Figure 1 (spheres, rainbow, N blue to C red):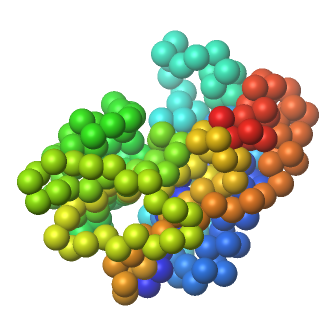
Figure 2: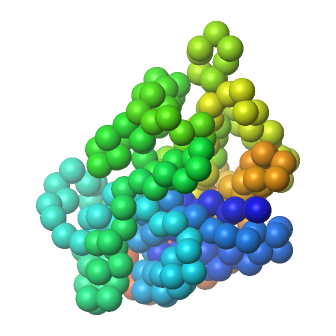
Length: 247
């Protein structure tokens, strides 16, 4: 079975639709959503409709920090730009959308995998995995052989070595990476709706259970159309700019 893993959609309908279509062409039979479905973008309701329908069909969905923020609470720790987007998104949500978000877990365990938005170590703390230390803490918090995360908006893998050290690996888009059974892995899926690695193409990961390989894919989409919607909605101009440059 081929499973597409999508993180950080951030209300970007054009990117979400492009990734889902691409994944289906690549043979995806199921989908996993790794949180931050909302925030930043101008299409929260349309994105949630699509994701909720796939969830009804069995797709695992976990909650991200932006999803939690959209339900309410103090945003003083957020910078001004994401805070404005969260306040705007809150006004768009109805009872159905709020109930869906409120029902999402922070993590989902499945066979030898764990799906979580940030770190498996205290998922509610929303720790960014920015290096080997954070990756090691995440792996130490679970017995799962493979941990799939989002949150940092760029694709990367960490893996254990025979000596116990953790190393990182930057995959090549479209090239499968065998996830050896003799290692443990932490896979950052990359961002569908707001990549920040200098490449504006949407990003997602595909796991092929039959071969045991994981592939990152980059998917071009109409980022300018998504950016124009952000401006038309009165959201911060910086959010539109980020989509067009991948920063």
